[in-house]
Amino acid sequence: MNYWEKLKKEVLNTDLYTRSGTEVGVSDGTLRLQEKDGDYFPVKVSDGDIPEISYLANTDKGIPYPKLNEFIFGQHPQNWLVGNYKKIFIGYWKDENIRSNAASGGVLSGIQLYLLEKGLIDGAITLRMRKDKPYLTESIIATTQAEILEGAQSKYTTAPLNDILAKLPGSHQSLIYTGLPEEIAAIRSVFYLD
Image (tube, rainbow, N blue to C red; front, side, top):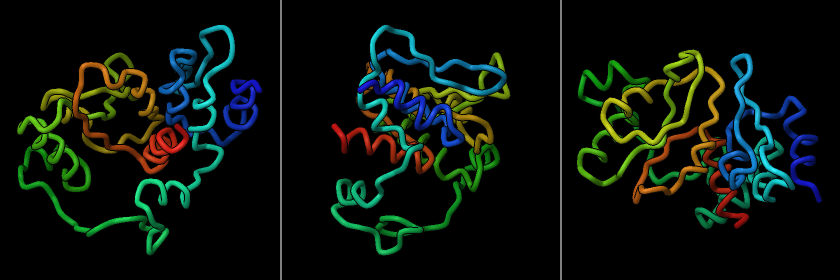
């Protein structure tokens, strides 16, 4: 079975492709993202096929939420619209500098900064706007306060966050990851399918 052809036919050449970057991030270097006209597309850069996991972990063809919930949490959620949780809170970060530079109160940026300052993480996987093309995003491992704040706020553009998976773990021992539901589901799918 040719997984590259299958991926192109079922996802990439359809309106389903959301550009999470997962298929690139787990491709063992057989794929890379290519930017064209403000959009990203995976291109094959080696002979032969892509790894099966690049096809299987792509969530654009569907997400097996019941199986992933059983695998990760050992149960289905009480409410499928909310998902599994222990407690739900509403809040904001007290530091005005963080809150004013973040979205929705700065809680995620504040948590990332706190964990980094306390030495509990080596970095935060996040998105920032590119320096060379500020209308496009790039995934990074933020290791400084300035880099974490560059990742603050929502990015309303194509954002292939999971292409960063190709760089992991690298020299990092502990990272925090903040992503959209389908990006997180893709990472969970990688572990579920492994």
